[in-house]
Image 1 (cartoon, rainbow, N blue to C red):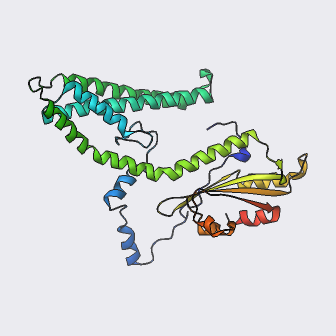
Image 2: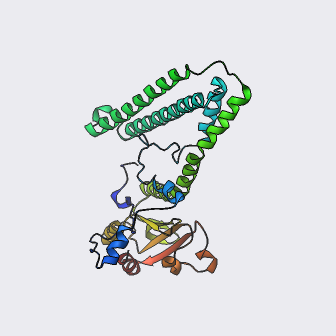
Image 3: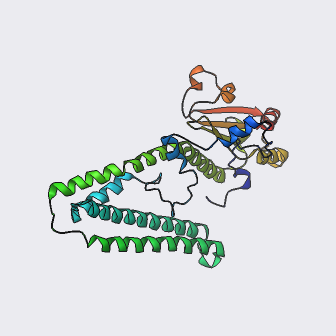
Length: 317
């Protein structure tokens, strides 16, 4: 994310945070109920929750991350099986391990390349790189070296594959068996993509708003007259939870209103654009004018507010 953005246009607020001061349970029943909350219990829930703490992915043990395509992995797997033609279970496992190690090596190469590119974008002159920047670079490089060594070892193991059983049908059956074993990894990848889709859409919308914010002034003048633009992003996930992002922040808008008379064309109102990922939540039904809007997906609504109306609205957010 660029650091050239005005502080007025820098925000990502989540309003569905847990309360800061949680009271202790008042009864044994409540204590027992809390103790029984052990996270997801279904197979699907566990697959999805295992990705909750994912960051850069360099040390992830998950085979497929959300931004990777399992088809690329299986293409490598087919090429390796065709080259080494393992006819026995042990040999098939060696080939699959070699492909896995190569897959992890490619992932870590992408990670360090992306980090170095981002670092050069933020600080083109390496003389301005500070210790935390270098530490991250060395850390990613170490992950890459470990993956490269593992891949080298797996390639050496492939030399032990028995050469006597070059049976076309047997190695192809081994390939089918290995793909079936990896089916759970594909299912985990699909669940991760479904889970991350709303957050990804929100992040893209926020990034676009930040880009527009750096290109535009705090006060815009169009058919609405001089006004303060503000975008509100509301994303509803599959479990009903909501994430709300506001650009610029309400505090920033308060400051702009406070110095409105200093602008060549003083703003007289706030124009809010509401962007919804998924159906419009009931709390925002007051924005809609047609029944169909409440169930529409990815709807965008605009509301013009006087300063007093905006202050009342912002006080409840």
